[in-house]
Length: 468
RNA sequence: UCCCCGGUAGCUCAGUCGGUAGAGCAAGCGGCUGUUAACCGCUGGGUCGCUGGUUCGAGUCCGGCCCGGGGAGCCA
Figure (cartoon, rainbow, N blue to C red):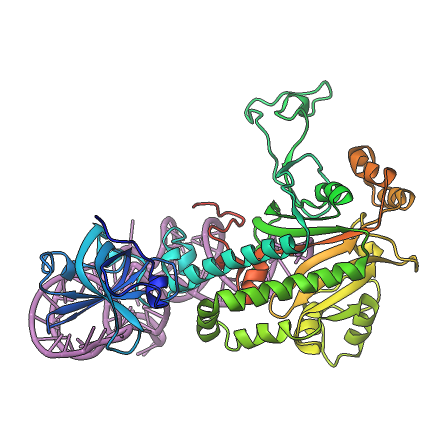
């Protein structure tokens, strides 16, 4: 009969019985030999930040020809007794009775992952091997826990998860350039009488793209199920080359009915605080790792956010703050201009020094579906800005009045025909509603201190890069 | 796309005034030790991003291109 297979996480947590042999499987991090006749092997299976130490005596039959040849990255299966560790560094360790090598490392002298800190830039070039590092594995666990926390928060608050379509025919959602989805033969395109491309011959009998936002679709479900959200991939074909942009990223978009901008801001605040709280509780070791290695004071930063009110500030007030600021901006500030990165950074990093919710922007710089305020100049939009990352949330109360929406669409040069179904939502039982988009990778970057969203997603897609 | 910085061993980097390359780590061998980013010694390891030019001679200077990073714009 085979022994129970346990995780390194359970071993280190003291959850594994010490009166019978168990088996652990994973990958070698390091091996140290003692001429006292034992070797120490740090084994990681990814279940926790810390590896488990295997103590391998030279009485093992394969000691000379296998154990002593183990290098970083080898896959092994070890069976033995879990015992309290007599040495510092780990609470428990395994006294190995058998260690079988499942997979060797070819050419260990050129295996890219070494037991030392690598640059994140280098690790992006070995995206298939980087999850074997502490930092990427930790970021991966944080990503998982954050996703679970967000789903749980919504579930506990009566929200329904709506899987909005990834392929869409809305070609002007206003959120950026789109990737085309087509099965047409590029070398032999069907033509219309006028010489244009005949998309009626394409798979969907019309032009189709990858979604840039699930918002419009989720609004339809909001106006039936009241509290809904999306959590899925989103695509932007922008030629963006920054630490905050991906061509493929994940977004969380809640949408609430019978709600205004203030309700929306409150939801955003509760969602973030709740997710951060769960993260600190369930991923304490990984957060401690990021606190020590990536951003000093990270845990305290998150605690501070959980325990304080988000500052809410009208766009107009923000402009006054920036005008008064003793700071030389490259772009001058005046009412009506879109805020530049330097302005947002000043507000959240220097003025407030915490997340800030900016609200009620001039309508000229915002999308057509945002609700017009009574002042005739602004719309009920909001952005949540955080230090270091900038905009983490963008949202608004939606324009629920058909007449006002139509006027805005005309103003923005948007084809009403194309949005007939969206307009229907205002014709049949319209209600005030609001929602926002939370950038998942930006959130992960913020809570880990990682400076680049490319390290917050398993296989980042950026302009010129979809190799893995 | 624009501006700036970079590309030298598997990794992180040094390389002076232009004279065909070094260190630490990793790997291999040996020593030492209940070790823990172990330590000590020895050894192997290079298309100096690619390409053209200047020069007796280019990692080094000049042009073009490719790739990476940071910042800006677009936004989440």
